[in-house]
Amino acid sequence: MTDHPTTLGDDFVWGVATSSFQIEGASSERGETIWDRFCSIPGKIADGTDGRIAADHVRRARDDIALMRELGINAYRFSIAWARVMPNGRGQVDESGLDFYDQLVDDLLDAGIEPYPTLYHWDLPQPLEEVGGWASRRIVDCFVDYAGAVAARLGDRVQFWTTLNEPFAIANHGYRTGEHAPGRTSVTDALAAAHHLLLAHGSAVPVIRAHSPGCEVGVVLRFTPVEQVDDDPAAEAMANLIDGQENRWFVEPLAGFGYPSDTVRSEGWDQVEVRDGDLEIIARPIDFLGVNYSTRQYVDADGNRVSTGRPITDTGWEIAPDGLYEVLHWLDDAFSFRKLLVTANGAAMPDEPDADGWVDDQDRVDYLRSHIEQVQRAVANQIPVAGYFAWSLLDNFEWAHGYAKRFGLVRVDPTSHDRTPKASFHFYRRVIDANGPCTS
Image (cartoon, rainbow, N blue to C red; front, top):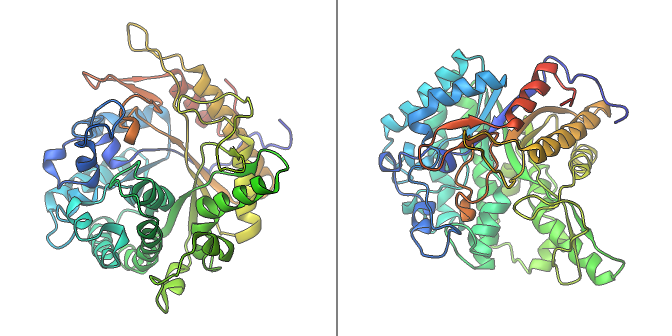
């Protein structure tokens, strides 16, 4: 490891990330979401499970904050369940639902941990799906009203807000391929959803700022570098298409460049959803861009992922830490965002607990070490990376995988929901304690 600082500085943000549907449970105390409905359809979730209890976080939030304090983080990225705040997605606010997040914010601050709430991490209230979901423009006003209700309650204490998590996954997996809720398979709906997600983000930014003076507002995108597997011109064209769909489609409008014209042509999108002024709203300045990174992909002429023989995670993703640096360098070079945060980085591994629940996950330790090294490399090269959030604090409901894939630094017993920190938890604590060096 060369040209890396021994520390990342006292003001560097070290955190962990979670999301509401994946950990909260207490489903009877909120409205129905698209993921509740999706889980009820046989065959949609690999292990036939659901999120009704998940990691039981609503009941155990203070215990989880105690774990965070033990870990030594100074920031916690979590998401707010829209259906817990507005059970119908619009209209009446459930103040008791907001009470949970109000207390969570207070408890985090009392523990010296900065809250980084995300307003939307995939769990749309089911009543909104029934009137069009993200494919309908009417959802933009619903999201703005919801964002305003949350910011009005928490904005006096929350200084860092994220509007959306991974709009690509929402639009593509939920509306194009159907592998995620709500399970639609329509390219038209997916393109409409992508635009309305970005429009909702941009429309909510001034509302959040109005309720939270002096705050910072950002959005989180997922980036997966795409490369052709060989010199075939068809593979090059396919890699460029996938890069446009997965990476450039969302960041270019946010940066003020509009939608990538080559991908618009490839998709055959007539842009009927784009009205005068929309692109200006989408491109409203943000204070930070959140970067989620897990892997890179090599594709052939048919768009199939091709293995390069590198080690893979339990989800079959190639472990490619250098891709994280490439993403951060590209974002800084091409768009010059004021601040970048690595908002989710982690891996599912085939954890094998012993009789006491202890998991010696040295594979996850190696994953974290190698990726944090790339963050150090970026900072050393003057790329404005200001924080790193490991995904995830807890083993959780991993969407269509159910509970079969485990990303947590902390093991959650599937029956008792008891927590046991893994070897990776202790490694990450040592990294934080040392303020940067990736020593084991």
